[in-house]
Length: 411
Image 1 (spheres, rainbow, N blue to C red):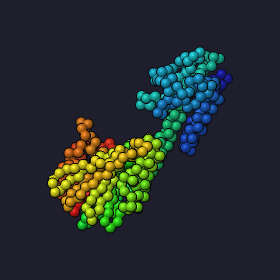
Image 2 (image 1 turned 90 degrees about the vertical axis):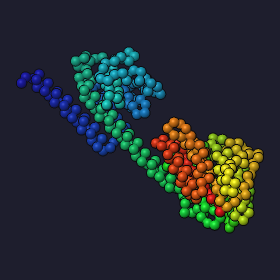
Image 3 (image 1 turned 90 degrees about the horizontal axis):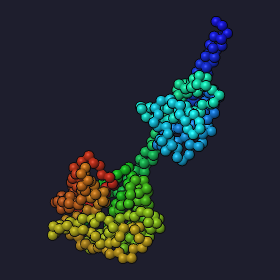
Image 4 (image 1 turned 30 degrees about the vertical axis):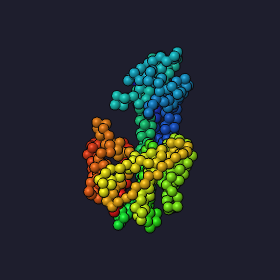
């Protein structure tokens, strides 16, 4: 073997050894769960030290295109990167030589399932010819290590995203458990000689912005309420938890303060706390078992449906005022009064029930609520009938809001 062949073989062996070492180094970093910053640093060093690269950029796509690595290529690595990549690179699916400005680049795409994940732009130095340019000669290897780096970073991103989602899921589970503690359990609701109470609660997410409560104020008085925060999800749930604490504070005062005063004070709090960003619809009532009088204030809430057993008629609890937080001050609040008779019922609900839609975008409405409360059955059975009708109505189209129902059967 002559000297030229020996030199050729030696060079080939040196290149093969370098490539193997480069792959081993990258693999070790991936196995050690190295950060994307470390992977990019090693990748950049390989390109610069071994392929005489002067100018290059690696663009990667997550939710949008961004510049992952930039070496003397800052012109297109800015807030308009996503648009620039879409306009200039996404039409390519294989290695190409392209002109950008006054420079010629080798474009190396990373494609997965016919979708581009990344694009590497590498400048070709003028001192090299097509035959001697190390980028051209080793572009398949460059494409291979780019693929590995991009895949590793994408997997790391997906892993971190999964961990984050699991953490959020766990936090939501805890929040859901805590919120459930704020909603009265069925076992805590009275079933006595004066009244029977039943409820239904189904948040749209794990936590929701609906709230209802039932409190024994003293030996002869009961208080109950239902509320709905505009919006849903975590923000609505946090606000509702805070609101519940304020309502409970007034409940501890028993019958010492009247309902309009409570509503005014709650509105002042909501207005200062939210500054008009959200509002709360609220219905609050107090029932005295000695006088058989039910007093209530409806602050912009869906009017509860009242069934008078004596005259077999439906009534709506409409007297009150606007919703809480809608205005800085509520000037006038009217209080409703109902003389309760044995057999009467009341159903309070949030708009997630009446506004639930089926596949044809038709709303559930209030007809079935009227039917349910007028049936000669217990309040628990009335609510069971109502929820069954709701499930039949919406079918496979799940409700898009929280649903709460509070029902009372007076004796």
